[in-house]
Image 1 (tube, rainbow, N blue to C red):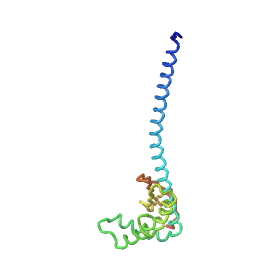
Image 2 (image 1 turned 135 degrees about the vertical axis):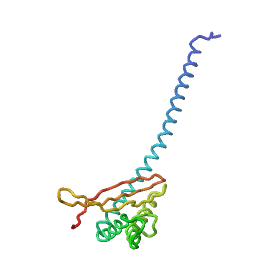
Image 3 (image 1 turned 90 degrees about the vertical axis):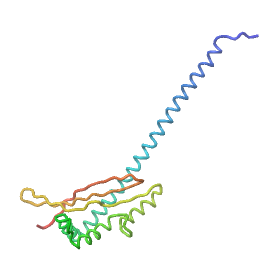
Image 4 (image 1 turned 30 degrees about the vertical axis):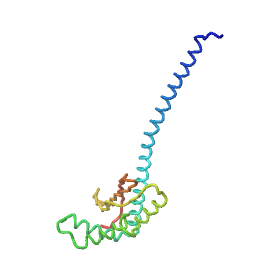
Length: 175
């Protein structure tokens, strides 16, 4: 009969210790990966919201370039409304509704709605919304010259993640 030696018991203990260390390592790795997956998903949603906001900004810039006269009529009415907000001119709501209607995706048959629908068809995992919050003319006098800028604030939403971008575009108006 073989006599048990002390080394055979040591092998079992060594295997158990290595197995326990490997189990702890794998569980830590899985836990960290799970947290990172949620963070990466949030970052992806925010990136898609920024992309949607850029789409709204491009639409607003296109409309400004194609229809500058209509924008100036809208801006004149907007300035009159800002001077006396308690008594808005009757035509202000008409100009603001017409000018901004195309730039908000919740308005039916607007170009912004078509862009949002296209984004939703391409990426079916979430819901896109785009629009423009602010669209106004700012005039600054500098060294005897008047410089005009259009301030545009656009937003994009994807899966309840909303991102705003703002742009100041220099325009030329005869004073």
